[in-house]
Amino acid sequence: MLNAVFLLAGFIAVSIQTLLLRELLVVFQGNEISIGVMLSQWLLGVAAGSWLAGRPAWLARLPLRGSLGLTFLGIGAYAQGMLFFIRYLRSLLGVLPGEGLSLTILFFSSGLIFIPLGIFIGAQYALGVRWAESLPGKYPAARIYLWEALGYLLGGLVFTGLLLLRLAALPLGAGFLVLSVLTAGGLFPRRREKLLSLAAAILAIFLGWRYAPSLELRTQEALYPGHHLQAVYQSPYGQHVVADQEHSRAFFFDGLPTLTFPYPDQARIENTIHLSLLFHPSPRQVLLIGSAGEFLPAILQHPVESLDYVELDPWLVRLLRQYWLPASDSPFPDPRLIVHEQDGRQFLKNTRPAYDVIFLAVSLPITLTQNRYYTRECFQLA
Image (tube, rainbow, N blue to C red; front, side, top):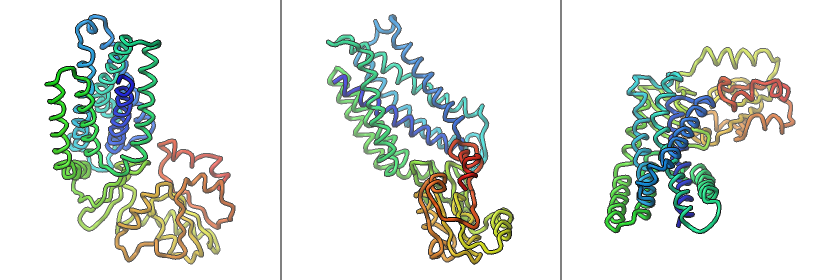
């Protein structure tokens, strides 16, 4: 039983950690710095929880399996509450969509979320080692660490490859709450506590099924005040949102606006696309990497013979096809347009045809993914 419990512990922990981290990235439009801050606070909480639960004075008073069950309850309930807190954080701070937040606010907000959760996780480990020490076998700490690590591996694969693409955040949070409550019920020694845990799990299933979809939409709209959401989609690369405001439609990626219809930034398009193409006497073969589709219509206004459009995230391409406004002006039916759903650097490396014009229309180099396009090696490939 111990092995199964800590396999589940690792599965729940990494799934909740990833879910909350992705939600916070939407709020803070984060890069590697913000991810590092969040993970360091998680690890700080784990260390504190292991230290506290491993103190001899505590160990003498704590009922082992009951205390372990309480940590599962704490993780599930606290994580569900933090999902609501994250969704309303920008409203509480009075911040508009697309507006950045400081590292100070990130530090204290993520600390409030990740340090308490880390304390529960760390306490689980210390209690698990104590449980393993009471059983036959060597290396109790290594045993707990191994099964928890296997749970982390399993959770990462299942969450990213399966759950994330099919369920929204609040239903996922409710599911992890149910799993945590059922695991706690299996650990509680008394029959009354087991029955109460089962009843709580049934109640959580009903409330999640009945209210989670509507709450998901309502809390998502809190992140984009003044907008009517048309679509919210989680891809392995981040969160895509399509939102309408009066007579315009905007596409957001992890909280940042990437494209607006039907009033794009004409000055930017003219300087970036039209002026560039005028420098070539007869641009026929054109390559566009990135831009979230913003530059496609402008390039196709020119007498080009083919336009290769490279976009890493296939989910973004699907949303562009479906929600382009107005639909009659969509560039995707144009036979000259060829869409390649892959990494731009890899496309440059593996493609041999010569292009008359290449547009590296990627965002600012604030993440490692985007910074790869601002290098000597990338320009040499082009």
